[in-house]
Image 1: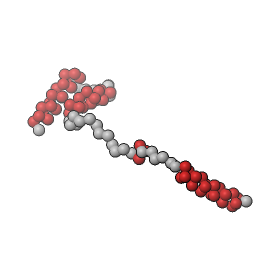
Image 2 (image 1 turned 90 degrees about the vertical axis):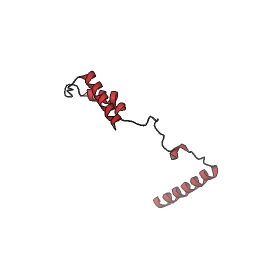
Image 3 (image 1 turned 135 degrees about the vertical axis):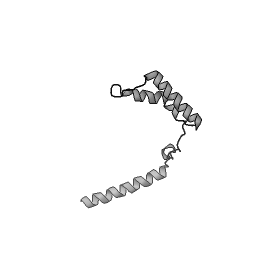
Image 4 (image 1 turned 60 degrees about the vertical axis):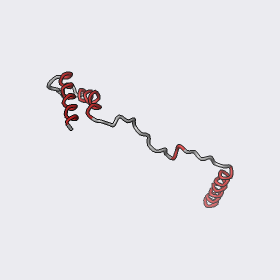
Length: 89
């Protein structure tokens, strides 16, 4: 824990050296973003590992459709259209 406290103290001292003792965020609100970008990685240890990749989603595997399956669906649609036509008159 002493190492973390030393790191925090060093970061605070670096920020004071760079931006001064008092930071007026009303005058320059973007300054806080700059400080977080410049010093955030020093305060948060991410383990040094690269970001992980999530599991492969279902869209990455495309199955082929056979002609027989296409014909089944076309026949089904044709029957449904015929039924609708007969109901409409």
